[in-house]
Image (cartoon, one colour):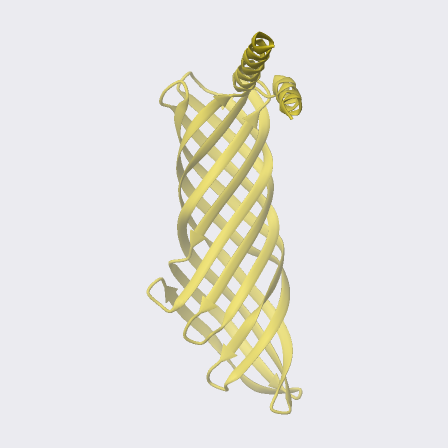
Length: 270
């Protein structure tokens, strides 16, 4: 078992030859954006066949927390590497405008405008989680300042629940993200990062439960969309840099010293 662990450390140390630095940061995220709904689904209720259409756009504000991990392959003035990002936001304010129509057995049953506002004080909760993986480029402006440009794929999971009407939905989207950020070096290992990111989801899948109290409608639905979510966020992070080569060598040397000490002790006992 010890030999196996030692072999893994040797492999990691060797792999670290190709990776110079890892950065881990976390902090606060202030997100705002637009979400679009263009859905149409049918259901049966009390012997009638209905089709529900909804076309609306929502503007929202959703603060939260986020963290970023970057790994760079060299320490040049312009370095290239990889980035992973994650964030969790909670919607606090939303304004929705649009229109709806309901058809029963092929005839228009009801229609109207949609104009709604929602806030954190209402009996509604919307949580948003994003995951991103992509390519990062670092530009060293000076010893104290660095600029970062990130681009990659993004996945969004959004959950909505109205505790009063019991309406709910689960949203899963995929698209692209980009970041532009400045880092301010505080010490040799620690830094402050100020950034702005953009997300646009190209494809999505949504399912949920819709309740219309006016007609006592209650039905489940599934829907898909394209280009239906755009958001941008300002974030502020506090982070730490790790020298991967040094970290790998320290782990390797520590394990080597431990094995040598144990072997020496075993020989003396013998």
